[in-house]
Image (cartoon, rainbow, N blue to C red; front, side):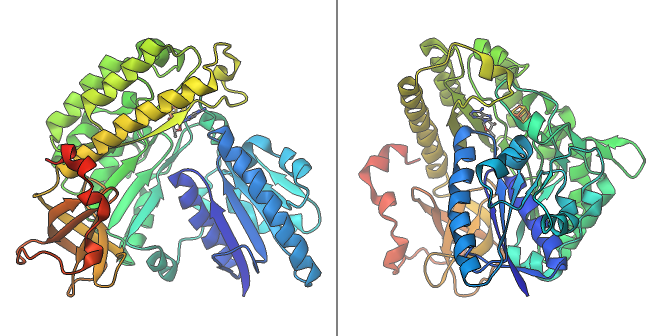
Length: 471
Ligand code: 5AD
Ligand code: SF4
């Protein structure tokens, strides 16, 4: 069998696309290999969201060229493919900067991989069409063995592209206009995943709550209606969705958090900034107060919901006062977790032309302050779990023998010691301690004896600095 090494950068959608490309190449007689060395085909599935992500790709390509040259000397041909959003944005420029690349294929063209690879044997090939044709309809279904190897949690792309045009963001240009997969196609995929042991699905899309795919009645269904259908699938116990825009959180979707037990109490809802002036400049089309009111409504539907957001610091023109409003919003909402980034100008986006760039040192300082607040709230959220009993879905072996690791409904990692359970079990767990990155617990109903396993004593949990965060 020929070997393919696939490396995905960036978001969850790239992870999903990487798996689908593995499925396509599997049909062509390729098996996946965890390292680039020895591979016949090396595929970089790239991210264009920030400049650093792009630089990483070129650095990585330099290393791959060396592997290709070394393997050539041993008589092995190696082909290098660049896929994903950098492929889309840079196109032929990639092969100009790194001639070792054989094929550049954009995110809407990868279902054509077999023919493109064939063509690339004769000449360097670029396919960055953004057609409205249905890529998903052309992808082979994953094989049961591949599904099982990927575990009991799966991403399913239900929507792709974005029509929002936030001033800083390349997504509308690299992934194209919003496209929603038809309900029947998504359901077939989820039924197939469930039949091979998947219990936990995250419906993904760049703007997933704008989902409006064709339903069984020929009409456009919203995300809430789709989730009602997914919740009917035997074996699917947990449903999440990501990433959402505040303006697309409709009443039905909020109600689904109250009405569907399978919909997890977790919501990633990026706000980006806390200042209305900056939100306006970002073209987010909502104010900070509208976001606060929305969160209130979500919390009314599901009071214990874990909230998460993305933030950008140093957007052009961001003043100290603007930044303080972001900090105030973070403290007010108390996010369970969040991602935060320094603003990175992206060629072709409206914000790239704005002149009032924030100096790099100030951006660093703001990012550090913001991350410290985010971390404070994350720790507080985790420590508040201590003493509570929660359902944990066991997903993998733990760090030590007899430990299994899983997730709470709030997407927190948990380690438990167990002789009797296995991966895939859902167990009631009493949370005993919160470490810096993991919770530790015992199965409910088991005696409350301290663990004899020294590995269970997470040093961070004993750190006196964490005391003020204890519930
Ligand atoms: N600079 C910094 N962060 C960005 N993001 C998107 N574009 C940029 C950019 N140009 C962040 C946003 C988005 C997340 C996926 O990446 O916070 O929600
Ligand atoms: Fe980018 Fe999200 Fe804004 Fe769409 S909604 S432009 S994906 S940040």
